Length: 170
Image 1 (cartoon, rainbow, N blue to C red):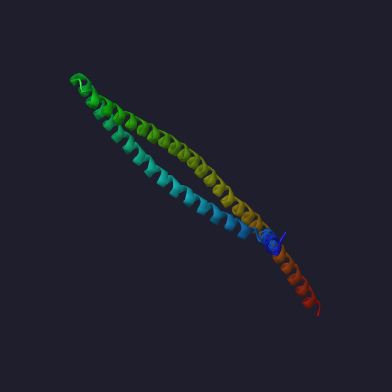
Image 2 (image 1 turned 90 degrees about the vertical axis):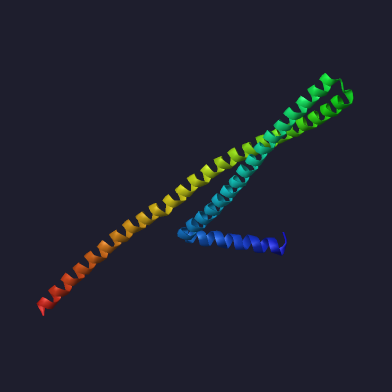
């Protein structure tokens, strides 16, 4: 292990210790990280939706081209033009292959979108959990602080009563 790895491990350990000592900062860091992940996931989803629309448009256009070349192929066959039949068949086959490629890309893109939507749901669920953690620890702290304050007030009253009694004796 080189000195860089040792330095990195040491800094990582110190950061972990610091975050354990300051859970409010750890929660804030986790919230920031989750917010960034949510933003990135939403950005990727927007990009994939754009790709989906583009691919759907290409599929429609390719389908129209296939229909056109199929009609041309039939026309050439009816006209007995074997030179045009072969050329039209090649063009139609190329377009069919291109359409299958677009369809495969669309399927992959839609699958990635589903995965990202699942990830987004998980991120949002984690964000809700993180937001609840500080609230519960804050309420415990608030309750603890309130009880502590009441004891201080009681101790102060007792001390005040003690001083009054002592003053009354003199």
